[in-house]
Image 1: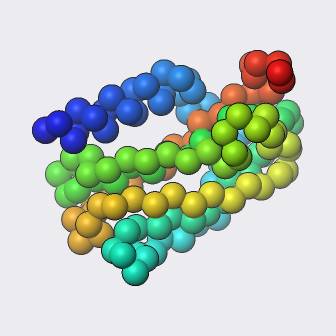
Image 2 (image 1 turned 90 degrees about the horizontal axis):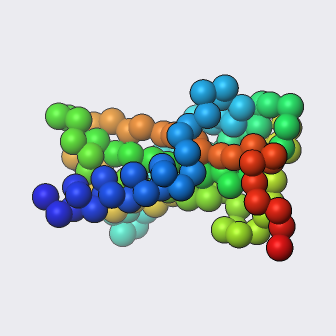
Length: 128
């Protein structure tokens, strides 16, 4: 039970800090996500996102949530497509690659949800 509370708390704090997924779909997955299991049994998800909009965006995060057959969250993890605090932007038509590793047992994973969070350039704090 503590594990679920921790995962839920992380998702809420992450969502509160970054807002909700933008409904305009400016940043989207660019093709399928490659799923694999490494030699230690960890699940690896590799893919790319693309900025389909007309403006640059920053603070781009990909969140992957793994669920069991009953819809319970097994594990969730997120990754920034840029180094945190770098101030890098994803410009229109630009792609960025990501890789996320999760430790959930692959035999228990029934489905996954993928969400992309980002901020429009105008909403980003000025560089320091």
